[in-house]
Amino acid sequence: MLIVCMSSALHRKNLAAAGPEQFTAEFVKKQIDEFEVGKRHLANMMGEDPENFSQEDIDRSIAYLFPSGLFEKKARPLMKHPDEIFPKQRAVQWGADGRPFHFLFYTGKQSYYFLMHELYGKLLNVEKHQDRLRAKGLFSSDANSMSLGMSRWFTKEELEVSLVETISTHDYTHFVQLMERLLSMPYCSLEQQFILQYRRQLEAQSMHQIVQPLQQDEKGVAYSSAEGLRKTSRSSVVLRDCGSGRVTVNGQDCHHYFSVLQDREQLMFPLQFMGVLGRFDLKCTVSGGGRSSQAGALRLAISRALLSFLSEKEGEAMRQAGLLTPDPRVRERKKPGQEGARRKYTWKKR
Amino acid sequence: MAFRALTKGLFGLRHSRGVTVKYSCDGHFATAASIQSPQPQTDDVKEKILQLPLKSPDYFRVSELFSLKDLFNARVHLGHKQGCRHRLMEPYLYGCRLDQDIIDLDQTMEHLQLALNFTAHIAYRGGVILFVSRRRQFCHLVETTAKECGEYAHTRYWQGGLLTNANIQYSPGVRLPDLIVFLSTLNNVFQQHVALRDAAKMNIPTVGVVDSNCNPSLVTYPIPGNDDTPVAVELYCRLFKMTINRAKDKRRQMELLHGLFTPTPSSS
Image 1 (cartoon, chains in turn cyan, yellow):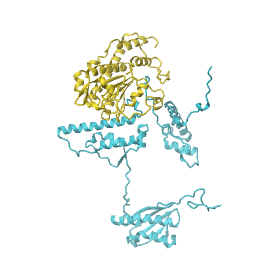
Image 2 (cartoon, one colour):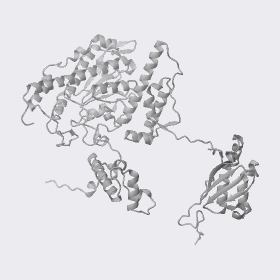
Image 3 (cartoon, each protein chain N blue to C red):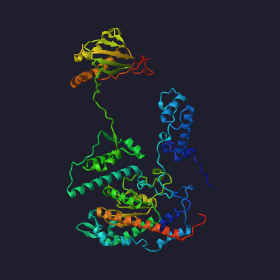
Image 4 (spheres, one colour):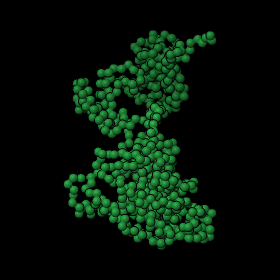
């Protein structure tokens, strides 16, 4: 007679080792159906057309019906399409008879190795093409290399998302190396479409200052306008080429508005720097912030407006002087456990 | 010595084609009652289809696919230098010429015929065949061969528990390969490929091209021959592809034939 004693320790499952939660395809499909039905109900509730109810309308309605003061945006009530919420998962990899669908299934990383296999195939293709041309005598080494423009390779994360499987940094470097090798061949434009699939366009960040165009009003006087900001102040300035040196701020004369000399100096500095003190007429509007930040915002606006009247070199000089750089400093928040943003409470030894 | 898993392998495959779909991997059974594969043939027709090829020694006529001249032209007889020779490969060698080992092509012919015949039988019964080779030059070729046959390939870094720890490496209920074909038994560090040992542990029969520096003891159906020359490897790939396609076509033919002439059962 054998008595088997099983301790509870053996029954305890290591929940963390199971990995992220797996959602079956039927479950996700059910969620999608419920989402569609719920979307129509929501549209009816809000009195809108159920047929053309977009995601923005849903977000707006949810924010209206369930107002939440929580700071963390992800903690607020959410209604999105289940495909965005549930992470994309692998469907079952094999058929009814147990045979896997993909011929590289047994490697473990089938999509990644399939990509490498295809890539190498394309490389061989290009080499074969080159050999054929060489045999005909039409080979030229600087023929149609691909123009990539402003683009970069997919990052490791983006590649993982597109392959729906995790890869190591080693694998990623291999991939990039092989792609670079393909690019280095003269006739790589054969496989242009394939290569461009794995490149992401960079947003063109122009370092150039956008110069406001010069406009003419009824009397033929040239003017330009620009905006400026500093801390919480926002300003807008119209610079007219009249010949007088008058300055109007929010309808008042600048001596009334800015009683302190320092603020008036801030306003005049760009004009003084360029030596055009008496030439322009300023009409400014400013709101928000305090005395000093309003002056700073106006200064930036004046410098930007001035650019359209000046040449490239003078504009460059202004940039060097720091007149065209918006000041990024904003008020730092107070932290708990401290008296201010940086100041700590007095430390007592005992 | 090599353990001939012919009968055991075929026995295991036969049961995998039952009406209720059951897979045994490490004693792990998964009944998929909702998935019903359509079975227009009764069981004894099935038996006939499976037993018929076993009646003749070379049912698929694999010996017609190659000749000694082909093997010689593909330089299959060229082994490594005398210093690299493995003790257990000595029976397969014809001799040594200017320090280079020459493999006996008569023995290669027999072994190749046995191996191709076995592969054909496995393919006929719908077995999963995995091509393994760790040689970087032939990685693309082997993968293309596998794709064209409709079988599987693994020419990349072999992770530790792919066969022995399959339920965790893949998902539970995975079907392991029924045959592993090695186009080269060594890995990049000139050590025996891990898959040989793991296949032996998991009772999976292996077919392998063994060169004069390889250990043939764990390979079920060794094929003594050159595994380094591109011509030789292309020849092997072509031969395997032709046998597998031939066997699969034969199977389809048999099913059609028997599907035409047996009366359709009233209840399946």
